[in-house]
Image (cartoon, rainbow, N blue to C red; front, side, top):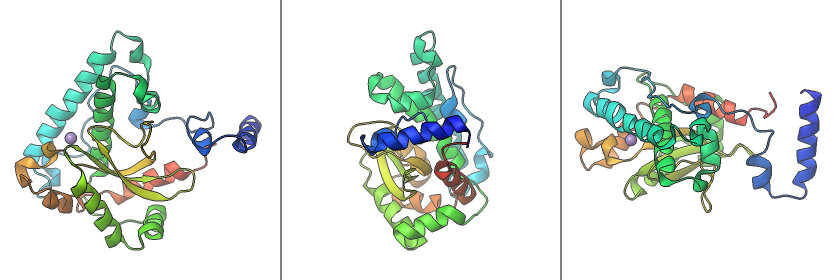
Length: 249
Ligand code: MN
């Protein structure tokens, strides 16, 4: 640890005796720099899918993937750009938007959320089968005892989302515990919204009807079951390690 960072960490620990944990683990200057598209400013761009549209068959069909990526995700990117370009918000990263989301108009919340959530979702999926390992496996078993119990809890949360929204497995950076949470519309657990739980996303499931209606119609349960064949546990472990690593690099 660099001396300067050590001093900063010491100052925060001292402050910790006086301030709430949310201040310590919220927007503290000791927090790691945002990575991936969280660091992106405008103009925002549609990322390429990490696999072909048909690669997730038979679990998620080609037509759904194509529409979901080229039409739905593209629209979030376009609408986000329409809201920020040629304004001071052009220079604001997604990370900063999420930490201050209630200060921005609904177009930012919906479209910055939509852009981030879909990018995260595509990278949660992988046609190659994998199983939980390492830190994420241990954290899931600590909280839920078995993988099946975790999946049952996640499935229940996903079935209970009323209308459109997302289900997330997150980690609490402070104590490294994992938890399941759902968010409405295009909200996500990185957003600072009073009365909601914050966490670092590990895996995400889109439960908007546009994610499954062509193949599964109203049978959300079948779509959720299909999802478990596609979760990239290598990616989940990578995200878990990044989220729980020391904040000073
Ligand atoms: Mn979607």
